[in-house]
Every structure is written in C-alpha cells, then in structure tokens.
Length: 199
Image 1 (cartoon, rainbow, N blue to C red):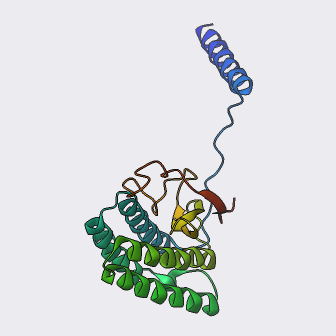
Image 2: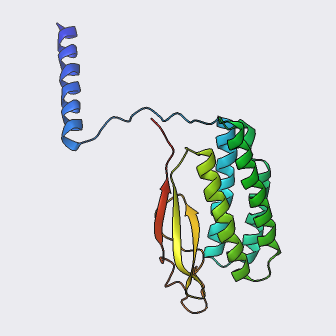
Image 3: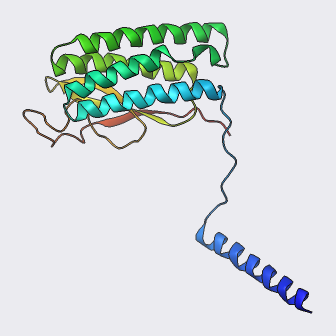
C-alpha cells in the first residue's frame, strides 16, 4: 500500500511540474549545436576574438597603453590560430591564411601609429579583416555583430567594429572624446550579425 501511495505522489508531482512548464512557456533546452570545425581551432579562434574585444574596449577607454598591449596579444593569437584545423577545402584554408597575414600587418601598423586617431583607423582595417576571416572560416561558437559608427573620423567618415553583443559601445568615439566626452558612446547601428551555428 505504501508503494502505491508513493508512486501516486510521484506521478502527481510530475504532472503538476509538466503543467507549470506548459503554462509558463518554458521549453526544455535543446541539444547543443555541433561545430563544423575542430575544438582546437574553435579554442584558438575564441582567443583571437577575446583579444580583439579587449582591444576594442581599450579604444572605448581611450587607453593607448592598453591598446598597444592588447594589439600585441591579438598578434600572438593570430600567429597561433590553428588554420589547418578548419574542416574545409584547401582554397578556404589558403584564403584564411591570407587574412591572418593581413591581420598581422594591420596589428603591426596599429602599434606603430603615434596618435589614437591613427590607431583607430588601423583598428577599422583590422576589423574588416577579422570580419572577412569569420565569414571564411564560418566560426560557429558565438554570434558576432558588425556595427557601424557613421561619424568615426572628422564627424563624417564611417568605421566598423565587431562585438559579441548587439549593444552599441562605440570604440571610435569612446568615453573621453575631446568634444562629446561620453555622450556619443551609444552612437552606431548593427549592420550585420554572423551566426553560423547549425542544429
């Protein structure tokens, strides 16, 4: 008799929880997405992106010492990128390698520039290369947002950056702009989102 009561109580609890899930609209978590690339490649690419995001944040803070420091880290990540681990044909691998060489050149140029505006111009070129690289290798571990600042240079020239969030935090105008201070930190618009994940 005790076994029957315990069984009924467990069944009732299960039904109540199932109804609650339906009422609140909660859905059980689906299976994790399967990456097209190897874990080793994904880890090396995540490191590259994290160094890029740190560089972007240093520009937001107008901190040229940190800009140079994170640029050097980004170059190390770029040099360590496991391109041969991409699951793609040789033409994709060659294209990716050419973007990596271009990224290395832009980073070296960025560090060598004297003013923060010159460094930001190099950052815009670097962003273009990384954006193209993401599309070539179809990095699928996170969604990346391509964001435009319409007044990055001379209040009239546009420039771009990448982010792992759609929230606009502008690295071209930043927190310490000589004219706007931090009032233009939210200036910009998302122009593209890259999501190569497949279920």
